[in-house]
Image 1 (cartoon, rainbow, N blue to C red):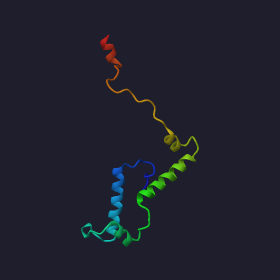
Image 2 (cartoon, one colour):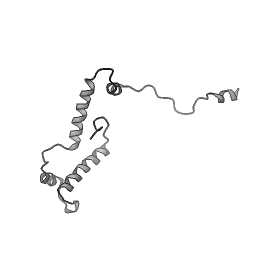
Image 3 (cartoon, helix red, strand yellow):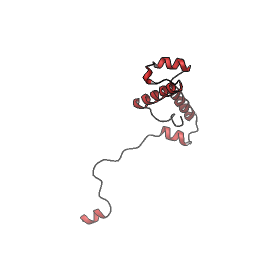
Image 4 (spheres, one colour):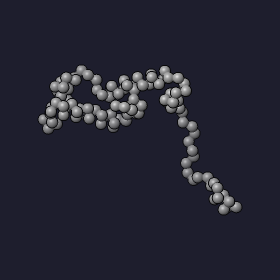
Length: 106
């Protein structure tokens, strides 16, 4: 799960992760979706009924990473990047005329 600590998780990605986790459990239990066995029963078979979802583990790791970066020295690159605030955006639309185009109009 390298890198999962620092990126955002859209709802669609959360659903994909959860369904992949359940798919792995089903395959490990050698049960097909065609057998119509509920997810809770699959978790009981695999012995992970009371264990947290992978999303909860990722959230905990993200919080650990945040604390780690907050404790870093001020000049460290990860801390600088995390605390960076983007500057003003460039104006959209027609670009200013620069270079030879300006001289051609004179």
